[in-house]
Image 1 (cartoon, one colour):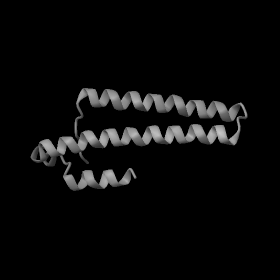
Image 2 (cartoon, one colour):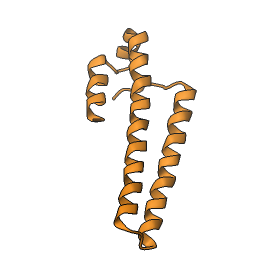
Image 3 (cartoon, one colour):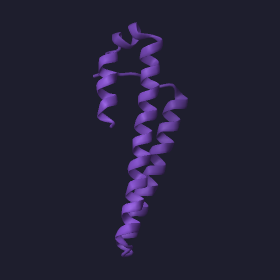
Image 4 (cartoon, helix red, strand yellow):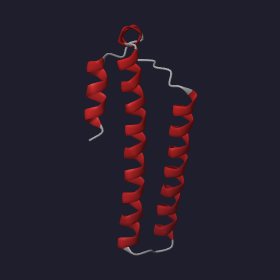
Length: 92
């Protein structure tokens, strides 16, 4: 398994995005507990899904940049461009 160390700014950004998505998901739980409409719940679930997708894309963009700028080091650390492509395609 690859052990790519992301720059602090990328890690911080991704963690912040995940925390926001976590808060949104707690909001969905609250909506369900309070008996919100199906439309409201699905709207919020869609927002969480979109936030997580964008977070994954942010992480992949950083990883691809890493592989492109120093492919030899990335390969030494176990992350080939083929693996990055495979991960990217999983995000669709």
